[in-house]
Image (tube, rainbow over all chains, first blue to last red; front, side, top):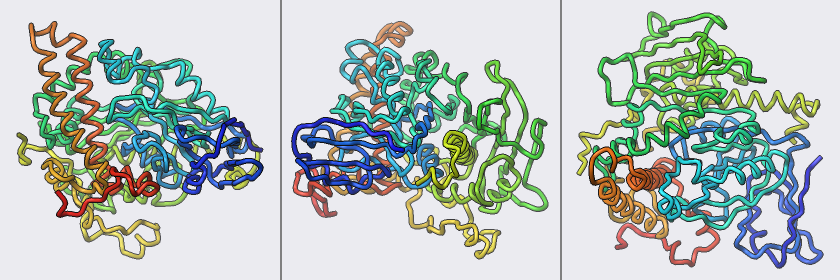
Amino acid sequence: MAVCTIHPTQSLNPACSSIASFHQKQGLFCTYGSRAIMAKRGGVIIQNHPPSPGVVICSAAGGSDTLVIGLAADSGCGKSTFMRRLTSVFGGAAEPPKGGNPDSNTLISDTTTVICLDDYHALDRTGRKENGVTALDPRANDFDLMYEQVKALKEGKAIDKPIYNHVTGLLDPPELIVPPKILVIEGLHPMFDPRVRELLDFSIYLDISNEVKFAWKIQRDMAERGHSLESIKASIEARKPDFDAYVDQQKQYADAVIEVLPTQLIPDDNEGKVLRVRLIMKEGVKYFKPVYLFDEGSTISWVPCGRKLTCSYPGIKFFYGPDTYFGHEVFVLEMDGQFDRLAELIYVESHLSNISTKFYGEITQQMLKYSDFPGSNDGTGLFQTIIGLKIRDLWEQIIATKTGAPLEAAKA
Amino acid sequence: MASSSTIALLNLSSPFSSRPILSPSTIASLGVATRRREKKPSLATVKASGGGGGGGGGGAKYKGTQMRERLLREMIEEKVAEAKEACEGEGEAAAASAECRVAWDEVEEVSQAKAHLRLKLEVLRQDPLESFCGDNPETDECHVYDDDDE
């Protein structure tokens, strides 16, 4: 059963002709006079084109609520590697909405819509300068609107979401977002407001340590003419007080934290090439069974490289065990080092449990898909992929309980 | 000016050796993608070409995108200079001042935007104006550059 909302509009909508390229499997009807033009896939409509006389947006969620995932990260939104790995697991590549504002931050795939929380900036760049607040400051963000709109999407209603343009620093005219099956809200403050936090079915915090952040920003920015080692350092330090106060404090609320640290395998390494990544998983989260190594609940130290598997320097080291994190009981799975060959990846995958894959080698396959991206040969890519699989698993469990119908019918 | 020898790069080129331990048939049975990584530029070469300025690195196809690249590049330089100025003054107080923090936050914002654009063009090989220019090929923004233009 679809949930439909009617958007009253005035004149002929030329945007309806571009609907053919939309992604989401939703019935979108555009009418001009009495003639109904049905577009098979609903998606994003440009709001600044003259809208049609009657647009009916129907959510194909099949009666079940939209799944809402929160991802806290300080790396900008929508184009991040994490997002690509995540959406790739659900199927289909997430692309910017076609025919809309080219500076839109939104990504849409067949099942998933990713919203960038920067779109909820209450103040644009000029406004922030005038008020003396950084983008990290809650005062720069409209949490009321964020809550209202995320709630609306979760309940199956379409929204007109503002667009924050990162190039111009201005707030552009809104774009229409229809409720997807899976909604990911990505940005600096997905868990900051308690009301928004309540709406999240699962939340992830990407915690990059200072050393790694510095190394990554050097890699990112040193090629730019304006930058130097000093400017990169100064930028990180100037943002640190606000970051610690408003962003970092959210990690206590996350169901999963991916912590990225410098390696312990190479003494005095400061290049940030080899990473030690920890996947901290909260215990007792509904529908979420933490990944484990060998024996759930025990403490394991594992070096896969040896007689059967040879690895090159500095090798790979795993750790698994229970712990506490901000007062919560958690399980930690940790990988230090890099995958050098396909064989290592498959070997590791075959020894992990509760990874929610649908076939043997699925993690390896997903990792290879984005092998050009950073993290494809270490714990960042591995754990991002695993989290994607866990979220898929979560979603399927929820669908199965809510509709009580076979999974195949729910997907139609 | 940064020289490439001081840039610490993530080791992205060929994380897997060309001779995998698993047999080709096993790999095929996993349904693993067999895209050749060698064809794509490693991040090392991408960085070297991306920082040079001029008529667009990697993959900017449309004039509008090249303009955006140039704009962001110039903004980074401008805003770094502004930030240095805003933070000048008596040590701790100046550094902690709102102007100083906001100025460096702006630097971060445009640096991120530039990096995202670069990632999109050079790794994903997508021009953000692709869809818009598909619908509006006549606009100035959608003029396509040849290598010997400008």
